[in-house]
Each structure stands twice: as C-alpha cells, then as structure tokens.
Image (tube, rainbow, N blue to C red; front, side):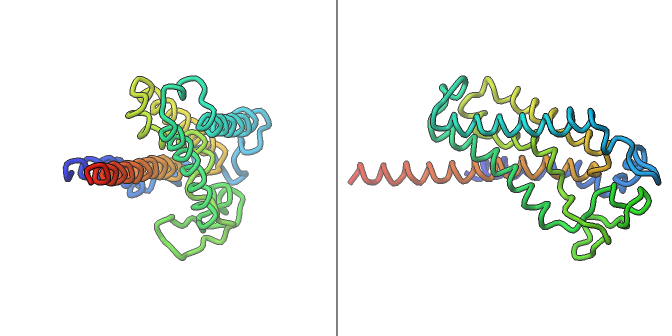
Length: 232
C-alpha cells in the first residue's frame, strides 16, 4: 500500500523539479522579449496565425472532448474496449483538467506579457509567486488556458494506461506535443510566459492522478463492502 502511495506521490512531485527550476531561473521575461518589443508582439493579431494556432485547435479540442463525453454513454472506436466506468472517468478527467485551468485563470492577478508597459501595455512584471501583489494590468493570465486544450488530455492517461495500455503511451505523447505547441504559439503572440505553459501541464497531470486515485479508492471500498456482504 505504501509503495503504491509513494509511487503516486513521485508521479506528482518529480515533474515539479524542472518546473520549479524554470521558475527560479527568471527566464520568463527574457524569453518574452525574443518575440516582443515596445511596439508589442508582431504575431498577436495576425489573422492566419490566430486562426490556425488558436481558433482551430481550440474548436477541435472541444469537439474531441464532446466526442469523449458522448462516447462515455454511446461508445465508439477504442472506447468500445473500455468499461463504462473507465469511459466516464476518461471524459471527466479531461473536462475537469480544462475547467480547472479556466477557474485558476479567473482567480489569478497575473497579467499577460502583452499587458506589460515595455511591450506597449500598462502593467509591470510581477512573478506569479508574489501573491496578493497586483501588477497594474487586467490579470487573469495564469496558468495558460489555451495550452490546456492539449494538456487537458494528459489527465486521461491514468485511466488509459489501465484500460487501454496499447493506446496510453501514444495518447500521452500526443497530448504533450499538442499542449507544448499551443503553449509556444501563445508565447509568440505575447499571451503567456513559458512558466504559464509548464504549470498548465503540471496541473492537468496532477488532476488526472488525483481523479484516478479517488476512483481506485472508491472501487476498492466497494469491492471490500461487497465481499463482506457476500461473506455474511
């Protein structure tokens, strides 16, 4: 039991190491300066760029999530090889990850790079670690919401590795690649810092693990209760 607990803790805590190292490096702002200037970010409003790397991926991600939700009750494709409970966990984990990132953004006081005075805005840079200190901008820019359209699917890996192991690795890699691509595309536009993207990935990963842990504990208790009932 304790071995399982430590393994799960390691799955959550180990990815934090490179993330915290990046935060400590202070490279968020220097990286943003590669794409922005006093005139702002050149790619911020480029029509084709915004369409292909923002609007279309977001729409496709939402369509895929709706397809998973539908498949939880009317299975299609690989979902037919999964039990009903696992299908529901898959759809719920992905949806919860995306919604949680949106909720965190609503609470955050951190503004986007394009809001900084040095890039033509009004805010001054304040680390997201300095809680309660506003930067003079509109806020609501931490973590990276658009990247969750890809990273949100990372949360589904925990159920897939058990229910459809042949698909799990490919699913995880595709989710990470998509999340990184969407996060980087937003950094080029000045919408986020690198740390915002990395934290989104970690939050989605941790939420997927927490959901799986809760489901496994609930199933264990249910099996134990049913066994006791049968014995009596």
